[in-house]
Figure (cartoon, rainbow, N blue to C red):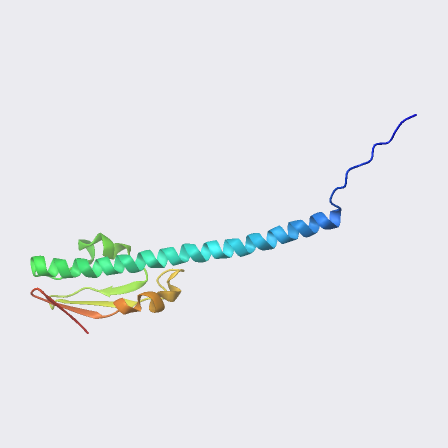
Length: 129
């Protein structure tokens, strides 16, 4: 006589569907956080590039007694979340935030707004407005 083996317990279709739904929801949450972290890194990099650009403008003026122009600094070329107005012989260098500069620039006022100023370079001094 044939003996039937007892089947081991397994997930039912409903349980399997529920597990897949939970994993899907958790992955959506994780991806949202991943994208937010990526955007935070991009805006932080942009703010650091802007700070380096301002530093370049000051060093350029004190070294050459000339205003920095767009092609004179690689740091300035990388900036997307700020609008830069280069000097025209006056020693001025203006920085304004641009929340529409890239898709991750929406918080630039909050995080990098302290850099938005007019910088006056004269001789070896920097005066801020």
